[in-house]
Length: 128
Image (cartoon, rainbow, N blue to C red; front, side, top):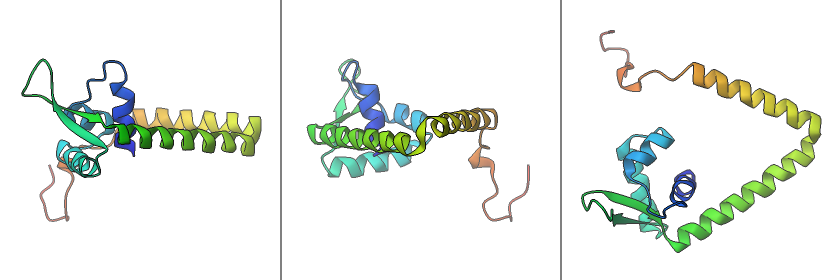
């Protein structure tokens, strides 16, 4: 679902779709992982691959009508759920939650993950 929403958000302006490398960068996934996800969504007829209009070597990923419908339903569901959460928490707790989430966001930005390619796999490798 995250991949569908990512494509939907970024494709609205020109309706040109996204390159796998763009999706990979935005979601923090490797291109092979994105390709596997795209293959799965393509098999479910949620996305299509299309050659770029200006560079035929470039392939863009676009939502199909079915993909757009599913994405819209997911967004509607998320909106309803968030509204219910706001009602459940009340104004004070919502403000507190927002403050905490901003702190978490700042912490994550200030403490990026390590380069996973350099981590030891099973403890037998030499350390750099």
